Image (cartoon, rainbow, N blue to C red; front, top):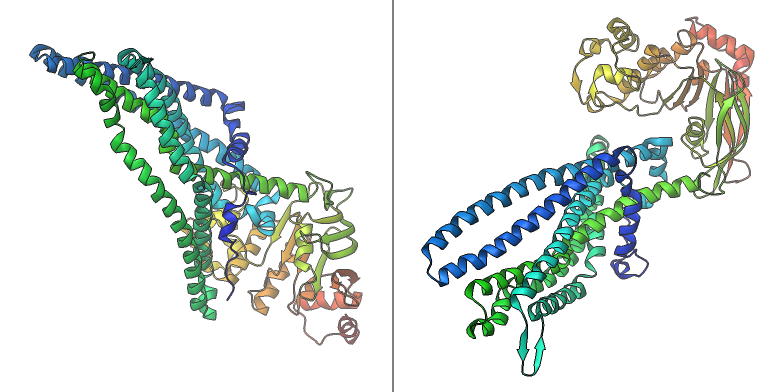
Length: 624
């Protein structure tokens, strides 16, 4: 059984991992564009609104702090009128605090949504541009699981970052405001001949520094641990999704036990990563919980001597205690949020890795470096011109070399060869999916190209949408034409379900999906069709029926197809045979046209004639 590729846990502590500062800088370069360009007005407007509401929030907190002095002084003096007035004031302050909080929630969440929308759109645009979504599946590495990075990690990076920015702004403003309260109200402390001005401020800073240093020392390895835990979660989701998507194949070949063991191993590795995170969080909890108990008590103990000496009133002592607690919250904000910050930086790193993987991909195909690439261009006529084509694997190993040919408009070309000679890769290069290598492929400038893989893609939605895909469902194609295409491809039983929304990819069999792909050709005939085993799920009669379209309705279409099944040569004019010679790793392309007598006989056979295969044709074909 094949086990997942997992790194040594010891590598988590290596210095080769990016630092939190490096991660933050890389994410800023990637995501700060929200505050520039077309979204700048929205971004800055929401940012200004959030900052203004943070200022109001700190102002309300200062008023509440001032209320503590007023109320507790009234209690100390047993002033019933002032106590009653204090109750009324605090109700008003509570209403004001709630209003500011509600407005801040609206502004904060709108800013989070706007930023996430911008970054998601940017990543999706890059991922789907220039076939990167396909090429990343070949490169793998740090660009693995882009769907989870875009859907989950962008959200887990952006939303907490907005919260952190608000929390940090609130912490800085609150620290400055309540330091002022501690300095003015707390005054100086005389210890023998030594006078300590603003001793409550000094005490708050020293106390916060001690707790912060302890949290940093204990929690420093947490960021990498959380990143590894998140990567393990993504791996488990990927493997579960893979089992679901391949459920039929796994069930048919009896791979249940193997998949069960693999999933258990994957979760066991995830559990080990979780345990390392839990241990770090438990160590940090010792400090954070102890601090939550001591922080309200320390200012009372520090202010008690002055209160007992009559230098502070009860209201001033409570005002100092409240201000000290608020200052501690502000000073310890970063440490209190270390775990969430670690989660956020881990998600930000995964988003950055996706962007960097796309940059690295561009570099390997010549956009960002000197590497060679297959040049796609426009031909001067209606033919496809292939010149000095060399196809390589992504690691540089040559697969096909020395391919040069011209495919005239309307010509039907079959690509054959032994397994592993690069037939499908040649087709992908022709379709513009495979950039690694050298040479040129020139296609007619205004030619429309349809690529038909072995497993056709069916989008979510109605059958009509699946049939028209990738063309828009704009109502321009009449229903009669769609039903006729389905009927001619052997799908007449589905003609009345055009507007039914189903999971067609799961409902239709492999053969029905391939028939639907041919129906698409009849609805929107392209100029060039590139097929890769597009009839593999059809029986011979159905294959013949589908391929006959290229002799009739689609006779003007240029066809380039890969196929192993016998009988396909009847529907092609020539073939490109990929052959390895003398043990070479790379394959050479041999281009040969079928003999004229073979083509005449094939056309006669396709038209419904009977009779045996011509001997000359058999001899020619048998020599291939």
